[in-house]
Image (cartoon, rainbow, N blue to C red; front, top):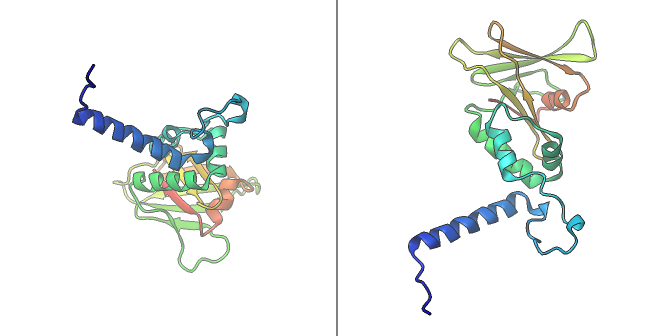
Length: 191
């Protein structure tokens, strides 16, 4: 029996599979994909966070960051960097930057289409308002806020619809998100 000749489509498919597996290994090397022959199923970590999950979180404003995604991003610096890259490419605008000459904590960030201000609640000092003002009528209303520190954590917060050109979000003053928003080294994107 003669072997069947392989055509160009077979080579392209094999290359696509190889690239996909290589990408998965690069994005999530410690999820156990590289050891499929492991005899003890409990010894192999469950693939809780895959590239599809991270891609959906970065590109779909309605996708929610669940506990598994949060833990996966917190534990894997490479995955955080990939997530950061996806958010940056998909945001459609530059990150909201800290005010010039900021040292220590900050309360204001600005971008080309948005200006974000942190303001302590007068009614309850344990809460902080995050106010995102849209620049002009042409600015599209943001639906998600991404707070990214490649060395520490990545967070995503769904945003309510704007009222009179301002998105208003109320957060606990001691939350990780508020601490990250006050840190000049953290990058903040709206989508």
